Length: 137
Image (cartoon, rainbow, N blue to C red; front, side):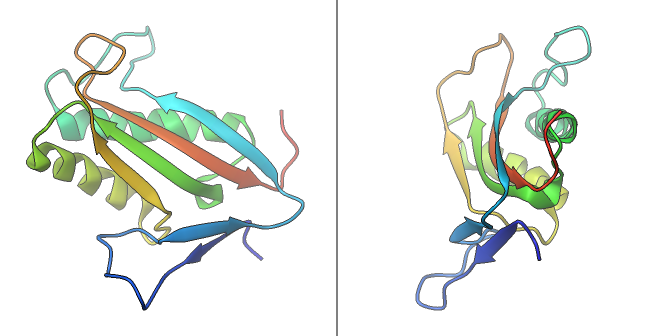
């Protein structure tokens, strides 16, 4: 049985690739991930000016942190995707990368355009909550 059950609704509008809710199985360990940033191995922002490129790096970094915490992509129950832009096209470019990375694990997600993020030249950040059955590190 999976740790995370995704719940859809026939009463609400169809979504562009996310469930309306998720539930976490009893006996699982919650993992709250810090916002994954588009940082290279030396702490520098990479893919400067590239929304999709930064989203891909954020997903990669998120999955490394999740793995080190004892979880996997299938354990993710919720994401919040922050994009430093007021342009819907930029948000859509980021969402396309996130959706592709998650494939059919369509967790409830919030996509938000913000005015600025923490690092200079940072365009994307991804927060996540996961539920794993493995013991922590």
